[in-house]
Image 1 (spheres, rainbow, N blue to C red):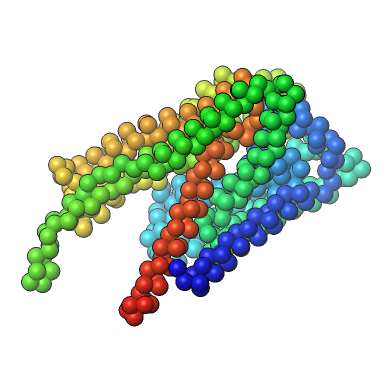
Image 2: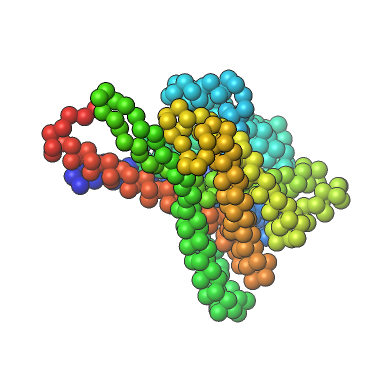
Length: 427
């Protein structure tokens, strides 16, 4: 590895670290007009509820009601919506086929959608803060509404830009890194709290050790499954090139065990926040909403049932909307490839469908167990929400992607140096 390659790698890593520092500073800049004492009382009253989970994904910004309170959730929602629409709307389907120009236009639409969703969510947040009595009394609501919405939307747009800069000038997916750092920022406090509970006798030391061992086991399982692939053998027919007869070649189609990634867990978590938002909007006047919110707190039977159903359903829905097996079969047929024992065309598409269906059944069960298993610790042992399966899954997947990006960059630099030493001309 040459010195120039290593210096460029360190430059990219330093940029990622700088972006993380800027993000963490922004999580401590509060929205104007918020009463911090009342805000602290609200979060003390909602410990162990789903509100604590979303404070986790914001890196504590929601608890401090900072300008980054929404984090990159509007961007993720907009990107998911565009992903769904790009596979169902003909205009967006054509844009995907237009190469880089089409992808740039889809990215621009995603940004517009982020601003639109951020305005809606920040408006709901402003009304919720006012209804909960968290703003200073002497501030008119109109002034508070304008300042809070402008601050939160600006913070969300800045985070979106920062994530794109990390993706372009740093290493890895910038948006994923921001979410992972949000979760990791609360880990030291959660570990310290658990150790303090063990010191004062509220938590058995043997139970604490068992929790640590279980966490390591969950991480190992996530790494094993996320690296797992189902490879379908593909053979290529003999081809005539000039006077030469090219021999048949064999390759494979790799399919991940968990094709949907962490998207179903994020979808399910967002959906379960909706009753909580309605309760904040309409106050305590609606007994049904209040009862539904309490029943949907983490660890409750209804929460486990709904959360599991949503994750499994979203796994199949996401796969159906984002992966076109018919298109894969047609591409194989055009390139002269076939799956041994399967006829090209419709039968190949049906075979790939059956393989993906079986993978999704296993992947959805794995995802559900990973997300729900730590709830037993929260429910019976009283440990922190930071040990939730969704947070562990996101952290592990993002770190694996980051390491893969670093290895890919180092490998490409090695090949580049080899070509230079060999004096080959390359473009």
